[in-house]
Image 1: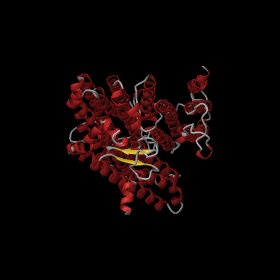
Image 2 (image 1 turned 90 degrees about the vertical axis):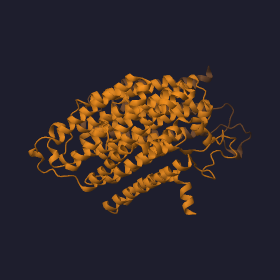
Image 3 (image 1 turned 180 degrees about the horizontal axis):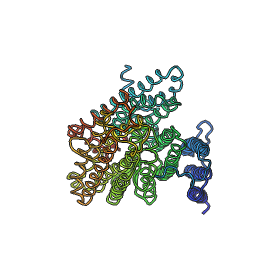
Image 4 (image 1 turned 180 degrees about the vertical axis):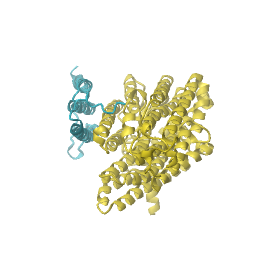
Length: 114
Length: 524
């Protein structure tokens, strides 16, 4: 049961993130939901790479050959960088929308409906 | 010597050239706007030359593999790795090469057009940086043989596209469209990454070939497939997730819209690549084929019915783009539904897929052309509202001719290329299920009706007073439209040449999962 604890956290984070995206009306809160969802996936990838009693794959100091594969960390790092870029772009869009529409409520941002 | 180095590193140059050119663009732009324009054009022309060379190599000598960081470019399995490919690699098979040809051909036309149509805007150095970044991302998506690498290029294309859609701001309207696109594609990207995690957790690999070899069709694989198909279908604008398409296509500058068509098709390519190459016959291909067919039929019908009442020319064309995406899904879906049955595959499955894949190419050409003509009209009269147009045929004769070519091609009227691919789809889908073929034909007729209406509203009628100052658009814009129009006519007059030499190898590469694995894993 304890083994699955990280996966339960992943699912909880994903549900919180999705609920925030779907239920909140404020753009900034929706962006927070996207960030939480990204964190859930990042945590999922990190947890996949965890092996009990394994060590970091640094060959010089390794006492044994029981090393964890570093690929998941590399994937996660890339994903974090992409997440930062996405957040920056989303927030700058929110700034421009607030400047022109005077609101960040998604119910009022509906100028494009035909 | 140098030629050898260049030839063996072509797949890397394909992505590196537009990427480096993109980030040098603001620096070069400091010198003068003309030099920046020359720089952007030169970068695009060089990328196109590389893509054509690479495609020539692939079509004559078979799939090209490029492994990043290896001692030899085609050393897919390092000697000390224990028999698995651990490095990121590009696997350029005929299907990838075809998508590259489409992307650079449309990209070249679009860049020429954009250099003229957007020259008066501000912030152009950033605009072209993002533009070249988008081209680089599209080329990367169609070349890569690594699922995480595919995700990275997918995210680059999402961010670049959102930036380009929002580029004109337009009192916040364009930003709203860009934000809508960004939200959809970011959430799609997150779920795609989740699917990658599931596959990686089970098979300890990120390379498409090795996952294809190890895949078991476990319940987790099914979840991963659902996530992949849903996220890529959202990115390519198929119906249940199509709501970003009209907004984004309408608000982006015309040149960007034409490029967006290609970027969505790169996601479509990803969908096909995952379903055929990674999952292949291990999945329940009949069910999955029907899922793709139903997505296609829904896109066709909903797209065209939503298009008919539209009043904005680019919004109308955007709904037609959704509708045409349905034809590609339909053709390839029929091929997928009979994937395991060699007899049915030979009798009509391959033809259906050839129709679907040929339609990708034709759609990129004629839809690009149509969006460019719409952009030309908006460039001169300053609005996309169909009710405020009319009588433009007197002033913009060449644009009118190009519009007619594009409109007849999209409606599937012979001698234009839309007819060639739609005919392949009709005749093969009819053998699979006649009702689907009838729906496809009805949608085609509705498309024709819709474009007749647009043609009448825009070009026919007496000249309007408020358009007294309207002239024909500048020569580079006409040149770009002529370039695409000639390709539309040539591929419509001689479809056999294109199908035999370009489309057939691509379709066989897509369905031949074992061949793909053998090339990457070396007899694996």
